[in-house]
Image (cartoon, rainbow, N blue to C red; front, side, top):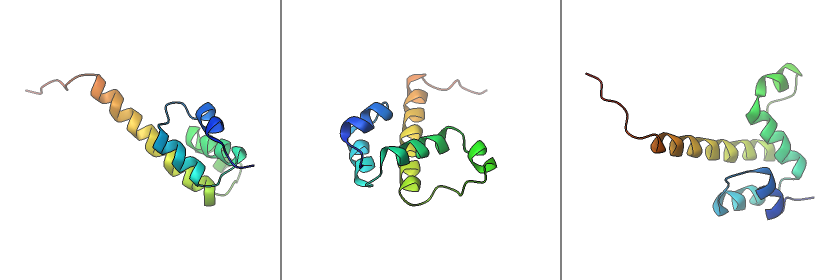
Length: 87
């Protein structure tokens, strides 16, 4: 079964409307979203289990979710204030 908006908001905290639409637009299932999140959380055990690298819809989800993570990191850096001056 394809993902619903409710599925995505429960599984992906901090996702904005555009990201939610991108995720739903992949046509992915809940299982594919879970697999993409597993790849992002820690790909080493998945590789050690000899699983093939993410491909297809899972790869699309990995790309979307990694952009979301990168965006969150930039926001965190912006909130920490200016960098100290180096003399």
